[in-house]
Length: 368
Image (tube, rainbow, N blue to C red):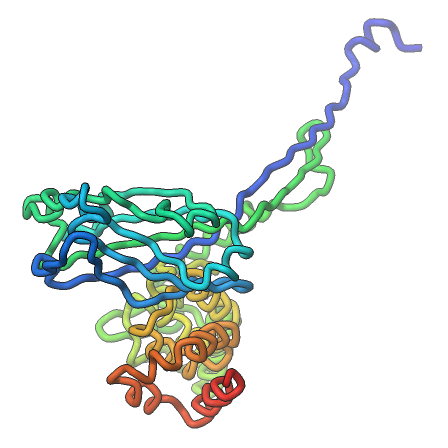
């Protein structure tokens, strides 16, 4: 029979329940450059308007424009530069989101974001002046060369959108500090996978050299083959004696990111290199890389009439990017008249393949 002291010393198991909540946010960035801004001699209350642009999500798309008032939104602030964010077709958008965080800033001559101003705008604010940054920056501060806000007499405005997309909850249950479900945490597995990054640029035990211009990347045939059917076919065809592979038409930084993904599953240059990486993900038959790049493009895409031609050419080349293709074609059908009024209208569609051009035409006809 256990003594009273033994009972007191017996450890009591502790069960701990932990919850974490992650606020899901979707971000979009729009950049507007105004050249020769110093010579923009508009009257009080007059404004410059950007081209329309679209922020796109899987379920919703919203059409916007920026207005810049060089001499203030109203006469009483004519010494200020005001900016207004305008939402088109707000009747439908009103039901799609309740609030959006807006961040407006300027880009100086060194590429830094300055003069950052933020607003939380609700759906009812589009009917009043809450979407106006009245005192965004004073004309004196903007025109002062020492502030370097007009490099080469060019004003660059960044407008960032942060949409609240809901919440994600996660729970863990542990007894005496040990999870009930015995598994290796995902974070730990990813850290272990990171060790493969040490193989990049390391010639020890490598058996093939990938050459891009003057840059040589030491690599491993078995790893490349397991991650890419393209490389697997090359090495099977060339045989084991094939120890040098020259690749033309790709930038060094793009190939470095391709190899980083091959070895670690990571990409460090998103969304900057999303377009280039999407092209090579499809060429090298790397489905995981393609999905990540396509998702990055959709999440950060600010389509407008100036870049839609490039995006049409991209989805024409990357046939497996079905979601991105849908977004681009939807924009074209919605802005077909504006596109036809552009001088480069014929040039935009002349470079498309007949098969893809037929898809675009079919989409346009279906909207008529």
